[in-house]
Image 1: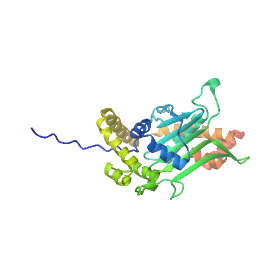
Image 2: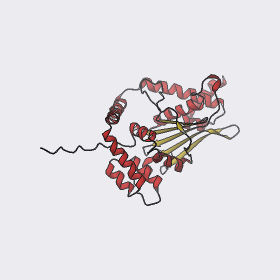
Image 3: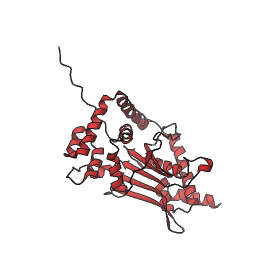
Image 4: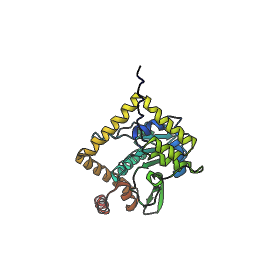
Length: 280
């Protein structure tokens, strides 16, 4: 009898939304992301529970969904894995942050003030500072120079640590480097004997045995190609309108023009036009 040929294992990158959600939802592998988040943002995710990681944006053109949404009491944390980060992606994520911070998840009389944090894992050399690993944002009231600490953004840039290898004391940096690896072999090389890192590689390889996951993963790849080639003129117009609406709300609470530009991506001229519109 002819020996059955061993099937080559498909590589599932941690940058994929499908892989990221699966690994984060799995209690045995969530530590991988929690350690990096705590190290770079000082946020301890203990006590936070998955609220609903399938919230639809309502945007038919992109059918965009939050990657992970965590809730503890009245506080929310959004975690996004941005495989191909761009200014548009970061603006879109901020739009969700403000939607949730504004009480989008609370109904009627149940509205309560809450703290909301957005954590972006960004796969790109695009950044505010060329050597940045973590860039944090808070909102500031321009008139009174008060920090609005109920809303915060952490941008963690993965490629900054692409060449890192485990040395016995840099576990969090090792985990970040693994996120941008291109093969299981490269992951093992980065892990360099770190047991927790090697455990994640084994978990990823075992996903090859899950037919549904393999299907979902490849559907995502096809969908990304479709989105990248599609004309999104209608989406762009809708996004611009929402950015202006967010900017107006921020102006009404006294947020500085500089912070609004960071949050919405609008130009200073566009912000000034909105100020004149509000004043009139």
